[in-house]
Image (cartoon, rainbow over all chains, first blue to last red; front, side, top):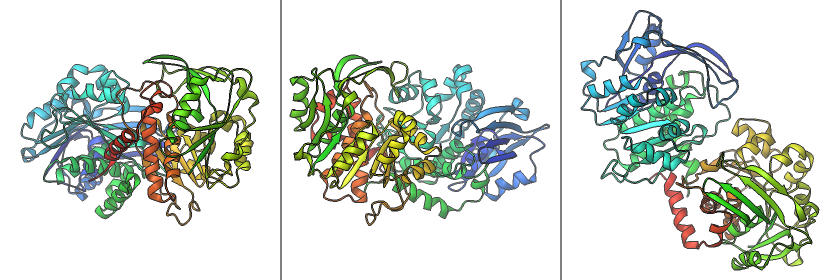
Length: 311
Length: 311
């Protein structure tokens, strides 16, 4: 079943202890759609500039990703420059040029309208809500956000959250959104804002899913009992950029590939999310995500399973 | 099979967002031995002052813990005062009075000499090594340490580490000891110092075990493949003090209760460590550890198992 994702398609310049890349293909919607493409059909809504060439287009095409919703606009694509030289767990932003993204007005191609899944990657919550409202027939909506929207656009964000089924954010964003530093209380607060489930990403420590009291009713995922999936300790992290978006792509892609969202599917999806994130950080940008095989993914899934499995 | 533990038996004054306790029974050897006592016989080597009364003695006696190695010395017991008001994940030390601990010379009762397991809780590595050398017949040695010894007593610490089979320390201590911020490289560095296994405690994120290439040979635990056990997200953490020592007690206590250290036993021990840590933080000091039942422990073990278990 197809997923439509709306978010950024961008170029990144990134410095890490492992080296530097200039203007590599990146952006939340790129990481998400590449990761999800190993599981299901993916359709992208985004805007790019004149610097988005046949070379970048070919990356999406090679993975069978539908880019008919990627608008070409005069000017340059979204550009981000960051450094992980001081802290591999948190990027220091050196430059952000919105470029064509500043006036982005998402347009949904008619051929996307039968998508059963929708993922709202981290962009202005006003745009996220507009896309969500324009696709009333989707079965399941996932979403992401970041500190900037939580702090400075809270009202808009709350309106968006009311229409999200599964919110995927990190520890810091959860605490900021909830106003509690306790992880369980913070999760309850966030779940009271609309989402049926909250998946909190912990970086190198994995991710924890919390479920609201009325969520996924009848599916057995209707209590606060959390579920935790590990991350794989890696001897080298080349570039952490996009790990969270890749997690979301693996997570949602796997769910979309299954006939029904059961507790077992949700849990396996959490593991697949970690698997896709672990591949992403092994190379700069989306390089590793472009060249995976389903066999490699299954092999790593088995390693993730062994990592916490009691005999 | 019996465990001997050497370490501090102390009084703590602790402030947390949940309240304050004055001079409650604490210390690494106390947390460790109470946690381990639910699994196996425990024997303590420590020193206490004249303020250690029949009331404190009764806490050990009620759990059947052998305190014949707890020396009574003139003066006051070790005292620590800390605050978690600013950060529940890290104590701010307000006062440390070594008192009788300043001149502690561990003496091993003859009745302890047939112990098959030895745990060296966090004290001066010179004393840890002395106890370890005086008990050459133990089958398995566990150890802990802290930043102070890593930074300022490194040579003594390295001598101690050469005699430790399983080292249990936290993330910060691991990176400090290894000189690498990458968790896998740091683990390899630490394993090159002597321990067959390193268990890195991550606080609210659980713990990860790493195994050296020649460790536990023949037991299947002889590669760098890590194992990760979760911690339980708790709605209220009353007092985090002693969580790590309780983890070590549950971990070692479970291993000592089993006929052989197989990979399955090691993994279950990691989960029992998390279980005992999760109980400790629910009340101030050792209060919760004093009043558990094996049934409660097994119930929580089942919750921990469900937390990461794929169907």
